[in-house]
Image 1 (cartoon, one colour):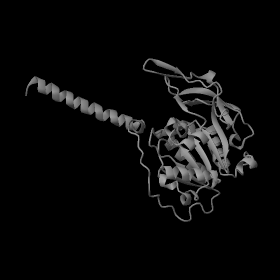
Image 2 (tube, rainbow, N blue to C red):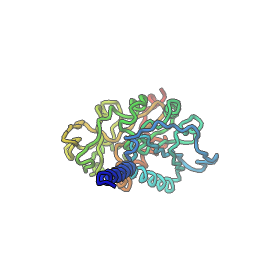
Image 3 (tube, rainbow, N blue to C red):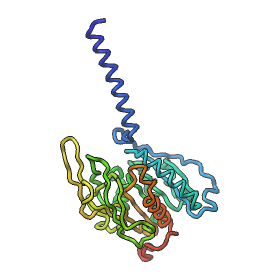
Image 4 (cartoon, one colour):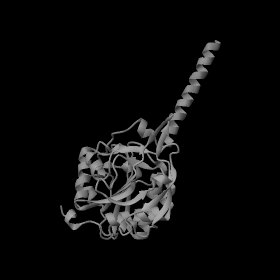
Length: 301
């Protein structure tokens, strides 16, 4: 074999190993759905026993389908947290990544749907509409972290109703930073038991419009002076400050209730007392049994 062929074969083996290793890395960090986004929508729902939720105070669907970026660590931690809360509070918790559950009959099995960093085009138009009607009819929704990123832009009703504005991106260089979080709505049921402020490390998201401007009830904000609100990479630097920077908000959606929290990139977030308490409060309030917070005149529309 000639020297040239030996070099060519060696290079080919090296390239193949590099390519496989790179793809494995992309999959491992959750970025597979960004490089290869999916539009797969389930058509057959999972079998749920007829007695699901019997004897439980709240029935919760934890939905974490990711047709875009997958926050592997955060999603796993969210599932574990809701299992712990469900056992302690006598809540029925059902985990799924099957979008066929977004059907009128299936959704009636649940009081609250949690989007645990669900991302991408994960449901068909008919399934999106079924979810919208369920929420407007009195359901509850809690969105976590990637539930508010730009991968949902094509679902116009969702983006306009549950998220404050167009997603601009998250900080980068470094990607996660510790910052001061301020609890604004101290009397809201979702913030019950939280300290007036705390420090939290996060992949801070920004939008082109703040939740306050968009008409949401702002519950928590992040102090942009306590971290570097820039997106840096490839020699470029973009300022993504919002000035007024809400990160947790709520609103009534006709007869339904909705809460969104931008926190939850790292699994460690779900192990903190303040964040686990906030999510527990959010599900309880969204279910309609967690205290006041919606104007009856608005809810009746």
